[in-house]
Length: 463
Image 1: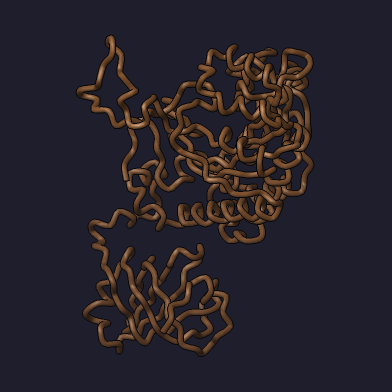
Image 2 (image 1 turned 90 degrees about the vertical axis):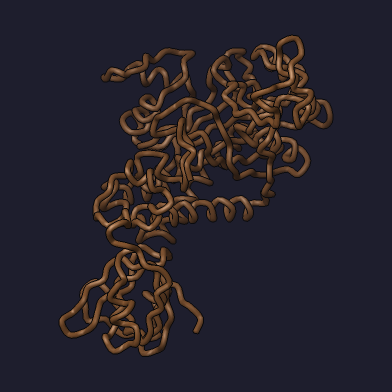
């Protein structure tokens, strides 16, 4: 018999028919009447399926009574209406196959309450908990919604390289990729000779797929990348990872306003999708993780995003009747506390901040006519702050050349990027959305390490 997912069984109307399900045991309770109740979950939904196992089946005494939390079993039986509260159907088993037992003395998920910090130490088992199963399903839904959004709008999915010789952000916090024997590196005048490395030059794990996406947008009109990026930033905050996923669309023949329109539409689309497809999981997060989460997501999905300039944002913050950890002044970057204050206190809605000082933004952002700012934007959401960062890209060859030099970057590393401005240059724009932060916001999880399967942070690369 073909197996059916538990989420399908729970909504099935096939009362009286035979079904086959499989999963991991959440609980087993034995009745004095000579039968057992087994709660089974296969990860397809938050809800589990109750299985009633009669004592008459062949392996009841030898195997079923040894089953405990964490054991893996397959069950065949009749789907019947359940007399119990909180469940519509249950399965009356005619056979139980025990694939793997879990010793209750050793299985680490026995306790009903285990801290998220402790669960990170057993990240290979934490998806079996309600919270992390729900996180995985929401993350999956947001990823599917991302592809659907861009595919329906004519974007091409681009696989940008993860190994690069250029620093897209110009920050220098990159992981080096090398085959050189670090115990005996080849030297030339006391310096490592990277000409003898695998690629013949210093190479790194990429911090962004943007530059590659730009080249394709300038040929195919609109593309997006969705993949892992890396930053060797020694940060242990709840908002940072060394390996994280980014969604980065690029549009040709587009300006900053077009870019902001796309970002707002994309974020709303994702919220609408999870509200439609992940209601059970979102209700769980609303109850156990962050009260009011569902209301907040619904509000943002239907709200307009306010647009203000960086200068206007600074003025609003300077009037704040509160003290910030980081001082506010024109020319400094906005911190998370500033971003949240704008969205949660001043305006009480999502905010898109534009036109930042050029000195605090990347070299590729288009300079505005005032000579002081660039056509950059950040999308800020209540509860999390920045979720999107983007800009209109600098399409003028001479201005881009000047920006690269001002940032102290090696011009020879960007010859191909400059070529785009020499051969049929066009106005174009794009942004990056930190996918982990989007999952954080949608689930209410407070630490980004809890919304990715295996977090990579300083001194942590297990599993």
